[in-house]
Image 1 (cartoon, rainbow, N blue to C red):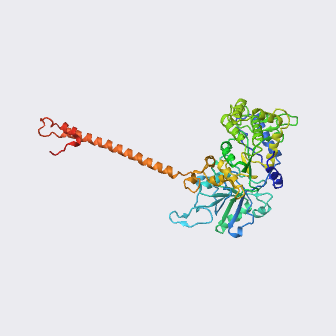
Image 2: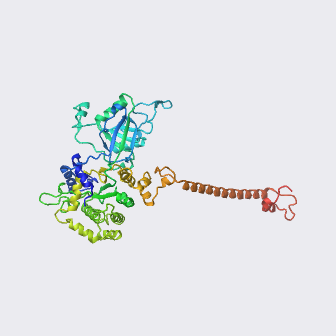
Image 3: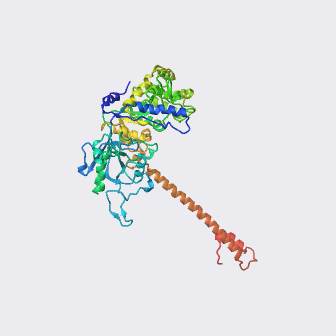
Amino acid sequence: QEPRSQQREQDQQRYQQPATPTLQHSLFTPEMPSLSRSIAAAVLFGSSAVAGFGTPDHVSSRLQIQVPKTLFKEGGYDHREALFGSPPYGGSIAQNIYYTDDDLCDARAVDPTTGYPSRAIDMNTNKQQPWPSPFILMVDRGGCSFVQKARNAQHAGAAGVVIADNMCLCNDLACLNITGVTQPCQHTEPIMADDGSGGDITIPAFLMFKADAIKIIEEVKDHDSPVQIEMSWSLPHPDTKVEYELWTVPSDEVSKDFQKKWKDVATKMGNKLFFTPRQYIYDGIKSRCQTGDGRNMCFNLCTNNGRYCATDPDNDLDHGITGAEVVKEALRRICIWKQHGEQDGIGVTYWNYIAEFLTRCDSDDFFASEDCVKDAFKHAKIDKKMIDQCMDASGGLTDDGPNNLLDREVEAAGRRGVVVLPTMFVNSAPLRGALTSNTVFNAVCAGFVEGSEPSVCNKCRGCSDTAQCVKKGSCKSYENGNGGGGSGGVSKKTFGATLLFMCALFGVAGYIHWRKTREEMRDQVRGILAEYMPLEGGDEEGSSPMDFARRGQSASLIS
């Protein structure tokens, strides 16, 4: 059965926008033979040529100018969210914005004493005072990637970054009238995609279109006036149940850690959540992997004679895991969910299989091993015969014919307009930022109607490790009296015990040092006395200097 969100997807088709083809890995490497490159090109450019899917317009964020009132815009300013960073879902950031004419491409060249509006002069440095924290930083687009700009803004102390587009859209007449029709324009909207290194970005980032960004730049630069901007995030609240889905493929590295940890959270929230795992499959026919005369031009990247394809995980078409093996494992997981999770939307058995497969079979040697898969089935307590029957009944993977389960995934990907893998949707809104247990937990909790969220949301929201909080039933941050900040601080009990231990350790070390020093001083005194104290009556018995030295402190130097 299709989840309840399918009808919502169909209702929202009229809000779709042109899509961008999805790519998980780079298909081109210098080591690939010419035939391999042609196969990769068929997958890449074929899918680009026929892409006609739309992206549902589920913008979950809002960009508004609060100060000055002359720039306030009913409904907020049009913008695009970055596909990286960690937006505070359910929250907002409202701070003064500072515009820098530095491109923020070189971290060493970022100077917080520059930019607009102006600040007071620091008498010690004879420069403007740095951007006062907290602040939002605005920078022009260009020179380097969006990720690099956001990273350097984060290192400079910004709470958020707004990137001003440097080109008008060719169909934006208002922008062209401002900048002049002779200026170059862009035919498609830029996508603030992750360049593969954005995992360390924690601040949110927006792209603001040029016509709107010019207004802010003029206000802070030409008029030298402060501008306060608000970045806020929310998720749709259709009812008291949150629906969410994860788009990925079995070979995706980024989502593996999340899939290992999420089982406890999904189980704890029970029927408050309805999950749907999705497998991204390339349509081989539209990607031109299958020719008109029925030949498979993409070879081991596809199944069903070129109908269903996946990218090669290791970019080596002759060795390692093949795209066809990825498609097979994807179909297997679809069938496992169909049998063990589609009804309740929780899928404990499904999560058990994912954990077992990632532990036992996630390597080049065992990924496609039937024995390893059988072992994973055994430990996850899944009937392999039932799953094999499901895979065969759907159309199989060997014949030149359709597979209804894989077709369903291809069609769903078209409705969603998936751009980047992995991608999470919560109540039909795409989740921005890194795919971590903390990010997804905060997002699903923000998706509940106020007052209907599970108790675990209030208990673990803000924890540094929500997965552990859910598993153990409490958040260490809250128990330690830290106000639930999730800062990863040390508990009072641990701090006290550590302090006592350190005191005891230094005390023992000091005592040992004192004893050792005392013995050394005694030895020195004995040596001196034995060498330099010939006493009167030295011939008498018991009057030897060494006798005195041996008596140590028991005798007096004065008779």
